[in-house]
Length: 73
Image (cartoon, rainbow, N blue to C red; front, side):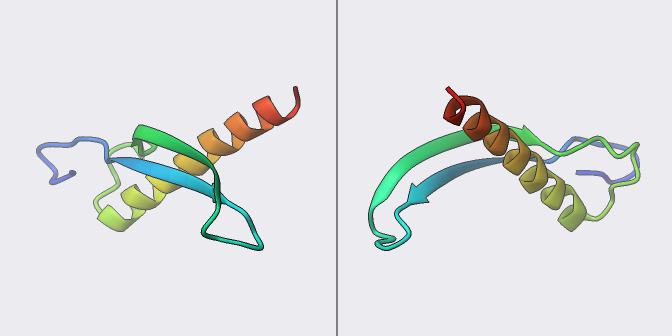
């Protein structure tokens, strides 16, 4: 929310499911990401779409880093 006199970072909760390519009904992994906050844009983030986009961007970064960290073991 950013209405000029009051501001709060946007955040999302999401569930990521990894599925088998040949059979999308087969779930091979599931992760839950909670309270992924948008990037602070210095108070110039009045557009809700941009703020939500930032949340998904950060969620992708966090999940990608998690996958890379544990796939290299």
